[in-house]
Length: 122
Figure 1 (spheres, rainbow, N blue to C red):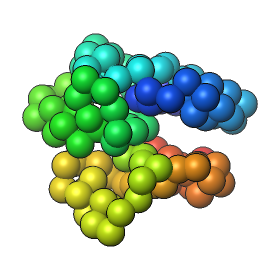
Figure 2 (tube, rainbow, N blue to C red; figure 1 turned 90 degrees about the horizontal axis):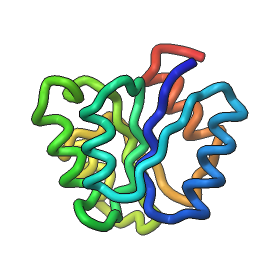
Figure 3 (cartoon, rainbow, N blue to C red; figure 1 turned 180 degrees about the vertical axis):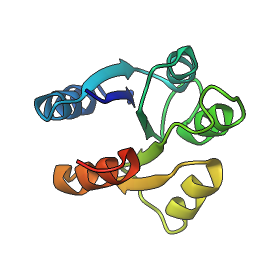
Figure 4 (tube, rainbow, N blue to C red; figure 1 turned 90 degrees about the vertical axis):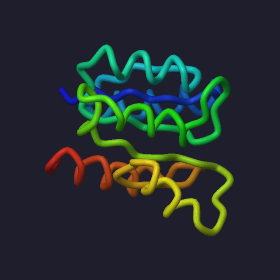
């Protein structure tokens, strides 16, 4: 069962997305801000990270840069998520170290396809 770390400060988004992912066979752990997300990710054991880019404490851009700077999380796939998609955000997310990028509200089939691609298949 693949383990996903969901870093999301909005309780409703966190609840909805975690339940939908769990129904599809993923084990989901949750962090409520960027600092907690970095700490949990560095503690290890995750196959993929879903990173909201607009977070308190440390935003998703900086949290991703921090995760890419250390050996234990350098290769864990990260998908950046944002509700305020602006021109250039995808490029900015990739430059920060995200492997992929998606917009909110999340379209689950599209997000699942990205997760499966990064994890090496269904």
